[in-house]
Image (cartoon, rainbow over all chains, first blue to last red; front, side):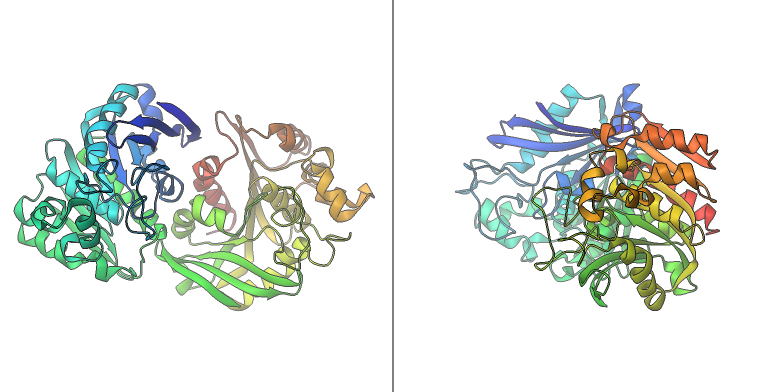
Length: 276
Length: 276
């Protein structure tokens, strides 16, 4: 693991690190905010998964999570959204390939050799964090924005023993029924739609729900409402009697101006669930 | 005046606007955060002047001011750092020309026709704001980062009737004695160094001081300490018995991770001075 940069931020450290990833077969870069409290004791961690076109960097710079991570004494990890590099397959569109990993393990060519973001986020990166940082891996929460909200919900609901809390900002909620989903799941997983189901938050919510609390914020003026399909998840949460809240926030769009506005409440939500 | 974008942010509006500038003889773009309170009554305004290479956008995205502007009910205006465009002179170095206006009115060619950032920030843009937005122009504070800290201090101290409070993040404090200053003041104002003096915060502090409070934060691990010369301003503030605080913050560098860490305290400082 190599240190790309470390900046003091709210008495803690905003780091960026790179490492050779076995899961993705390329170098991967991630961000990690460690609060000052971690100098004294291992701290809980919140995963922040980013959306289409983002890298590890967008949320570090724009989301304003550090102030609250420092206040509550939690780490925040910011993975990249896909494998990258010259030998890694890509597509000319913004919503497939590099920058658009969709948090699945691809089984189809040309994506299968590198696009293993599910394994990367659920296995390899957690092991790397546990080995190198003062993080209490028994206390984890997960959140994300847009495609990353999809990742947070699907990973979180699939691993209820690992995550105490799930939240999302404007998540892609029902990818098996959306152009943000059908294209990518088809490309990465193939035509057998039965393999898509465990990557659809609405279907997982209907079937399993989540033992812990779930918090969803959605901007009412989001330019991508037709693709995000918030009504699908809202219905599923209510039908499942899911512990949690689905909040429509009038006037807010899909940008980080929306994410940053509600970041404090999301961090407080996770901190409460994690006993931070 | 044209609306470039408006995003809901912390219940208010983060806007970006452009207009034909008489002072600069080109189109200029600025950011303006208006808190929700401005729907009800005119609000005070804090000026945020950015540093070398920045546009109106950097601080909007990275500084985290909106949360506190909303909390205290103040507007924040984010001017660009220079005139821009094809007909505007430029230099191949990052610290002269476009992106490096230094908040002076250039008298020397090739800069004189467009580089009038002093007039733009002190005359033209205030008039535009007063005409178009619910801002109480009798209650203004000013802050900035690096070159923008220089601008905030020099403009603020030169206009004590306008500004109730001045703050700065890692300001260029003594440009007449620094390579961040001598090069630019020479280029923009010419060889007669007597014309430089009113653009040097340390000299202004020694001579005039400021009637209101002054707050300075400087990162102790700033990579540009030799150019910023914080000791010059600290000495001048103490010698002048200036109401205020000069704070050295150990471990912080020159980045927006530093600025965002202390933005809340700066906004609280201005809000208090402005009765917000």
